[in-house]
Image (cartoon, rainbow, N blue to C red; front, side, top):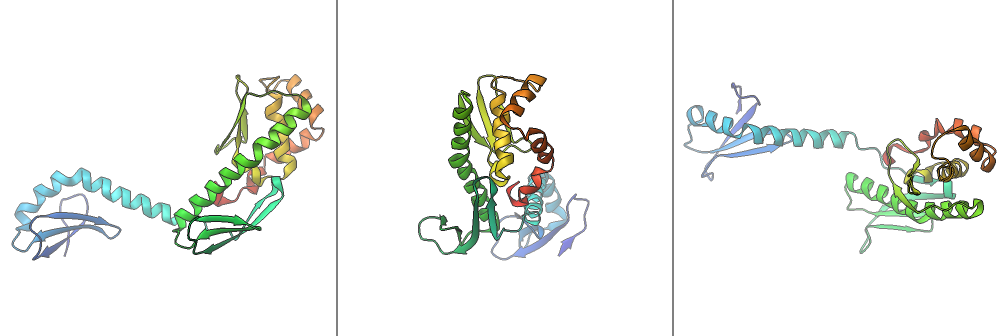
Length: 235
């Protein structure tokens, strides 16, 4: 029976002939208190609830957070379009013996025993690995063509930046650059390379970028709306 008591959270008492002691069970259905058959609920349960109240609060919040996460899980995509490198992949599910994700012949296959969360995590991990595979060579080719020398490049998942360049010459690139049209991805790579010589956004910086990318102004304007190229599941 569900109890209405001074205790902060509603709970249900379940008597069990097999129970030797009181157990607190928290699930998506709420708090269930399992007690032995002869346990005196009115007298002995309130102090136990008070003693366990912090644990119960944490457990209920964890369940609620998991429920919120499940409600917010984006729908799995049917295709993945990586415009920057001219690739389009069809997403499918199938039983896989060894690898839990397979990418062959334009088909991205995830194992059918993935949960929705696991499938999305695997998909985002695959995007990160694709970024590591393709973005550094693109940056290196532009650096050699325009005679820039950077220290190293790292692929990350920044929430609001496409890339960055440090004073030490280290360049960070967002793996989600793969979703952008190639001209915008190239513009961002050139932008970060220009910071190797001009560590600000001065007139000298913009002149250098314009020299390397004659469409810099147009590309910069298009970048303001570029996040719409990134699908919701990848954010």
